[in-house]
Image 1: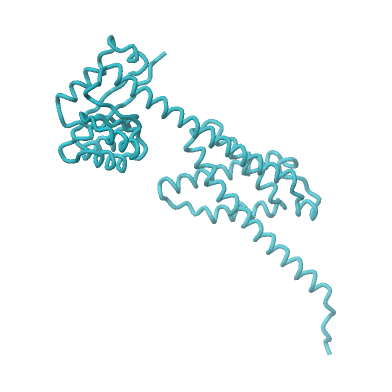
Image 2: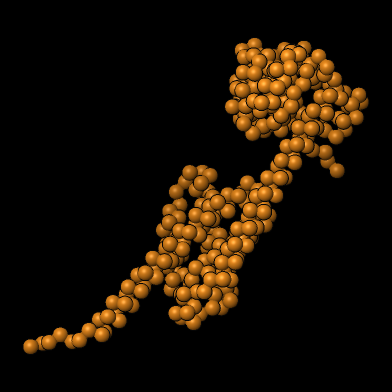
Length: 295
């Protein structure tokens, strides 16, 4: 089994300290914890250089010296946290000031090390602790997101089962999914393509004129005498298939864009039926009007 390689960014302006930390990380024979963590270190001397490096590569953990040449103390951590809001940061220093330790955690440090007491074991232990906490938080977030999605699907499916279709009462029709499964698959494919375009439009700031495409889809559904229940079935089935084998970030994006799309599509279908009913009502009224007196 291939061991995962973790990228570590070291922000340190003293070459002797850089060498010491690299030596600790290479002391696999000294620390048994090293067998559980394979790291690759990139060292930079200041925050500006760190920004440039992070534009080209992602790092799981940042090791930050709190006493750099151009910024010192808690200000270094505050600035680093502004620049790297998502990365795990382990701060360290030569200082024995307890207030600095407390302030570091208050300002977003995920760990803290004192160089005076540092050895290979303590360094690996801190790195493993921060990584495991990060993995746990990521899994918890994924589980919460999945639970939220499942609840949304359940709510929509409950709405499907409890809604009495206006169009079913009007036309005596079943759902498109039950009556014409092949047509339902085609509509689902069309809706899925529009959902992909919505994500592309959001991510790359391009314009796909989704409103016109959704209006065309709504008109097509209207001519099929579709109901809101049909739209919800198309929406939930498409989302389930899209999110089956995708990562959590893309899954959340599908759900977010889907909420907007399904509401817009329902609005266009309602507009279609309003026009339809107006035409029927006008026709019905005109047929009941007495003929005009020709004299």
